[in-house]
Image (cartoon, rainbow, N blue to C red; front, side, top):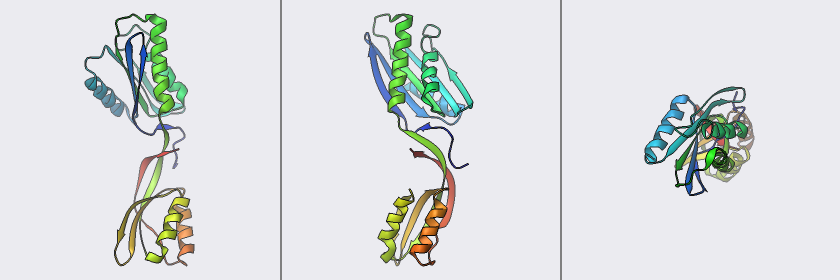
Length: 212
């Protein structure tokens, strides 16, 4: 299958939230294994070693096939990790890890205040992160005459591809990227454009996150 059935964070992002002088820093990123999620959590803890708490939550996989985890990291039981994970579960995201870092501001928030603060911190970063799907892509090489260059560039855009590199010599050599679904359509239009004389050669096939 060329497209993952669930959405994934497109990139790592961070948002901050304050509640009664306590500072909450929510950092969210894609993670495709428990090892990646744990490495991310470790990195955030090393970045904020003097924080009162670094509350982690993650979901590996997506849809009905997930492995999830959360911890209160010293906050009263059920006030931080569970609310943070609940936001992730409700977001529709998979392969996602989130750490909410708290710096205590001197005023006790109480159980309800903590739940509210961690929930709203998680919601802010989930709301703002870009969405992507993990898709299989072809990277292909194509040599073409200069008189077809501009029309070829337009064709790449029309087929939702990307030009990774252009080299100019006797011909133009282009390195292109397409999803597996779009590549055959690109090849068909390329043959039509060149009266059957051109065909892109697949160099590699891999997975990448494609924004949606």
